[in-house]
Length: 107
Image (cartoon, rainbow, N blue to C red; front, side, top):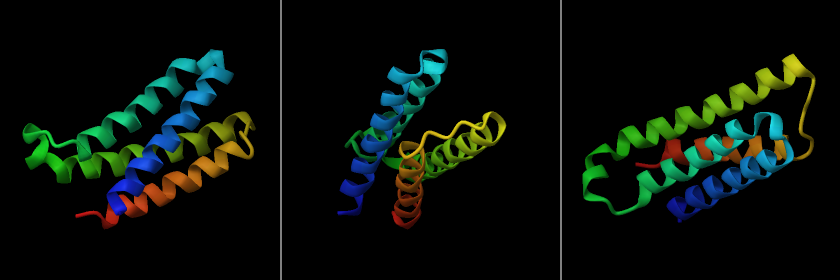
């Protein structure tokens, strides 16, 4: 169940980033790459690929770090620019915090 929830949250936050890419052409590529990163990490963590089996722990830690950096950059961007994507940004950050929590608990 936890794995399904992690995958669902990763897809949800990727969708949020893709929607922001569509809305903000100035930094579209950053949002697209961020969304693709979430999908790639979720796929690497859960797809039954033998070559990734031994790396699951590292992938999980990379996923946690990636998500934490995304939250940090959102906060830095918000404080520097004064632009907060309300309510979508804070909702997405809650999704990402839950994602980190579930990834932390995953073994």
